[in-house]
Image (cartoon, rainbow, N blue to C red):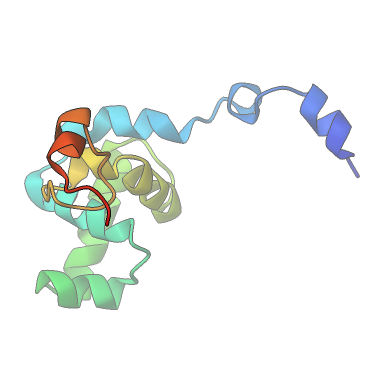
Length: 115
């Protein structure tokens, strides 16, 4: 078993393993609009049935979209795609009022002061 101090001495796990989940974010432009929508919902943790219901499509179509997303982004699993979706939420989400988006200084100045 590796002790915590020994693990810290091994350095960055991304560098050591050669796997950086952020690299998938750079491949978002390869996706169609519908694939981006599926990816965004995949990042919420929904299963195929819930994704299909939310999108108004069949589970089979959801599986096809996920397979396309995984392939186009050079990933191996839907879990990796979900991680990329969480990391790239800001780029995928069209809702500028979304609470997951950072608030710019200009937006802060227009907010009402807390009472």
